[in-house]
Amino acid sequence: MPRGRVTEAEVAALRGDGIRLETAQIHSIKISDVGKIAFTLYSENALLTWPNQDFRIEGEEFEHEGQTDDEARFEHHPVPFGEYDLIVGDGRFRIPAVRMDAPPHAVHVPWTALFDPGDWPGPPEEELTIDQEEGDEE
Image 1 (cartoon, one colour):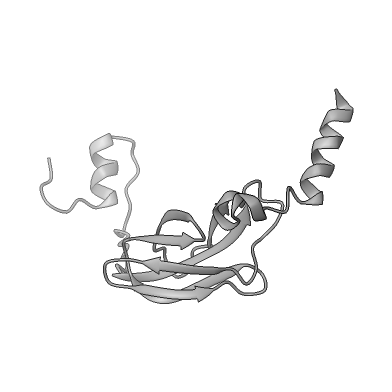
Image 2 (cartoon, rainbow, N blue to C red):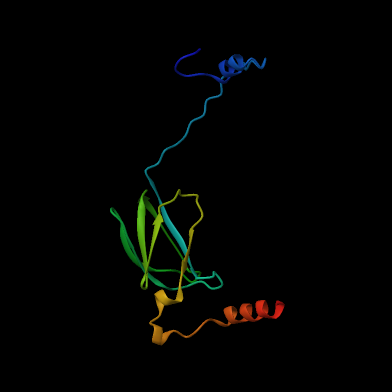
């Protein structure tokens, strides 16, 4: 039995499947200690986004206060990999930093986190329309 690094050819020979590779294939990986924080803020059921919404990010090595853009998105890099608290209104969400090429997190923020109960404007028209359509099918 080979010890240490085993090539694909040695594995094939050990299996006895008759495949003999002439060259060993070597793979390399890049390990990074930094990533990005990226998210999009959605309503609870993802029918709406929360553009221009104030938020705060708290982490061991990174803190930031800001506002989402017109498409309810935010992205910042580089940040150390790890877990971060995203505070939006009264809501707190735990999100990890991700690779630079990863898509943003979809963060679903309930109405109750953004509005005082007395100020809540009620469900948006899109939600009422969906409820009515589902009720019509029964």
